[in-house]
Amino acid sequence: MNRRAYPYRRPHPDAVATGGWFLRQEDGEGVPLPPSIVDWDYQRDLDFECTVEVDLDKVRETAALPVEAELALTVVWNSSGSGLRMLAADRPLQGVGTRSVHLAFTVLGRDSGGVLSIDTQLVLPSRLDNPDPTGPRRAGSVLWHRDAQVRLQGDASQFPMAVVDFGKAGYPEDAPWYLDVGPNLEAATMGAVLLLVNSRTTVVLDAMRKAEKARHAEKLIHSALRQDVVRLLIEHTIANEDLDDDSVFETDALGHMLLGVVRTHLPGMTLASLRSMRRSDPSLLSARVQSAVGLFAKES
Image 1 (cartoon, rainbow, N blue to C red):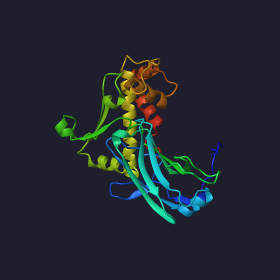
Image 2: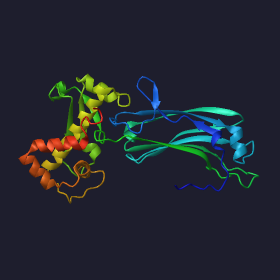
Image 3: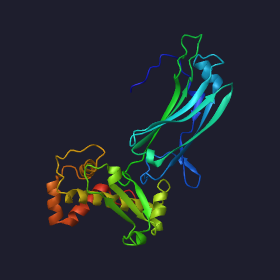
Image 4: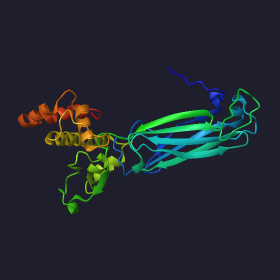
């Protein structure tokens, strides 16, 4: 295991404590940050909160800092999907004793995607003339930190989602969802694919809003949606004669995403063999996709 060596003393591990990050639900209740949010979409903002206990006296004593040294708790998040890195909180800590600091911030859905990482740090906010040569002195010196991650991007959430009334929009009024895939393979995936959810199918909407606290029946809906989205993307790939196994696109392009879905779920199969299977035995192709996605497997 690799361990980072700091060129200065750091606080005793017991000097800072936290119960970790929580994700606030629509009802205001917080749940421990899950490893993934399966049915997250780009219209959903995420609210995070965390409490950190800092024993200022113990931090200064064990990190060789003078009693007047100022400290600060900072939070930085970054999204692999959007490429954004933002400072979410910067809380100065002065005085003595133990401080309980509540940290909270919101990440907008349009700024998120992929893996969202949260780095919580206790730092020296400004340069310090530290009389102890073993103690930290440079601004930004990290005294303590904790990392947390949550994956936001699943098969059904790599593109925006919209809730519409299918009866008024011209779609079959009782269908629960519709995947709209554009024809331009060079276009950005985020602008070329749209998952429409029927506002009339309240059971589906409720299931998608309860991703972290879903009951068994709602998990079945999640599984059905994932499978159908993957199936439709694979069928769209097979039907597009401009695509072959050697096609190359920019990483954010629709063509790149479509080929990636095929390679992820049906590895070792060429587009030519999939096209042949679709012509001769479309039911077998459908069954292969069900198996690859694990339709209902985790919910059974």
